[in-house]
Image 1: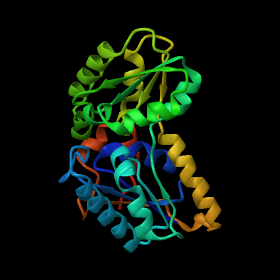
Image 2: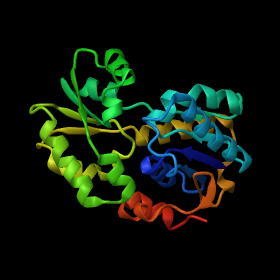
Image 3: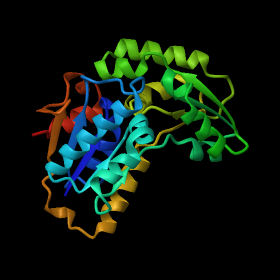
Length: 255
């Protein structure tokens, strides 16, 4: 079975790696868009068209499930992609792990891009899922861009700056950008002891597998291939992906 994952950049790697770990027989089609990245500041209709084009291309390649491991794509284009592909193709979106973090911690910081931190979307998530927990947004300037470039030094500098802006005493940090889990170990090492990290990559992967299982399709016929599209063109994962374990794992089997 072919599962397609769509993101502007390397944010699709954590969920893809979880799928690879949990169901290595699945064939993956990864669509990145370096020509159009980042998607966050772009007009809504532009994002819808960009994501829809990638979804249609995935269908043409035989995808039976589509995953949007990207907050911007999920917020902006999820309903349109579902309408495009029809009821027989599950489309799985991504939501930052605010709910489980708030359930586990009295105080939570959400690390995200500057655009997401200031967005109505994040404010609505907090209002809906934070409950009695105290939640603060922390803009991680430059972190996603540094990850896409594979620039570890710049990424670590952005993490250090975000740690400085994170209030002391928070019990949990939500990684509110799908790029950030690629550096989860580095983030955890720089936070005070005892602070829990929460991200959505594993949950999205497991939800994808539940949707696959509900289809009743034999997934054992796949060969575990990884096919990559770069802004609509057949290609390979960017060299920057090699800076991360997930990128190296997936890059080793891409076709």
